[in-house]
Image (cartoon, rainbow, N blue to C red; front, top):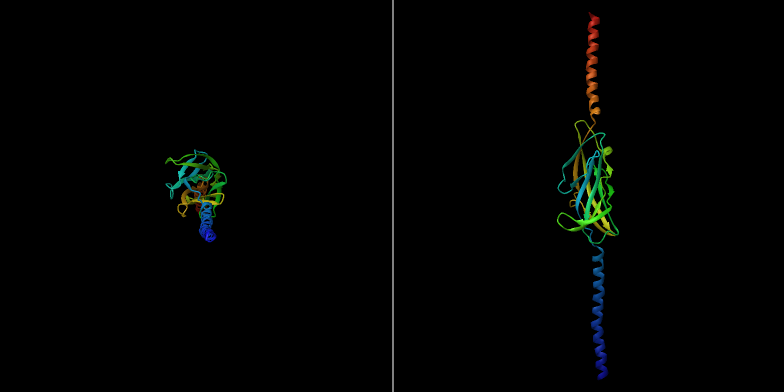
Length: 214
């Protein structure tokens, strides 16, 4: 009888241990994907712009969305850059962040935002700062027309910590800004001067014909 109970006890222990181990392994498999799918949180995005060598302006992409930022004359420079903060606490190692911009519905071009430091934002939250400075001249990419042409600038931010993605894109709608581009004064004056010259030449021609007739 003693041997029977011992064998029965071992069999019961096996029936208890096997489900426990199976559940433990299953739990580990379920937790692993959750850890690897951590999100890179981005926020407090700014558009940096410098018009013709003046002081760089910082425009909050949320509050300045849909607004006209600058009026630029042909021949001036207009440099663009971006700044954003990451709140993932994954560290900066393996993290890359860029601001993508598009003009007038064209394809998006990335501007790399290097890590520049850490600190608290306006709400007191600690974060890492990524900033390119105003580094890309948009002047030659704008459309200039008499009376001013309104160019549409669209941007969004995208980053990743190793394989963990992060976006700051106005809920997928992106951020939109407007820039008014006007030709340089001499360009505007040429058609006017040409018109005046034509009128004067016509009057002189008609005057000479009248004099000849008399």
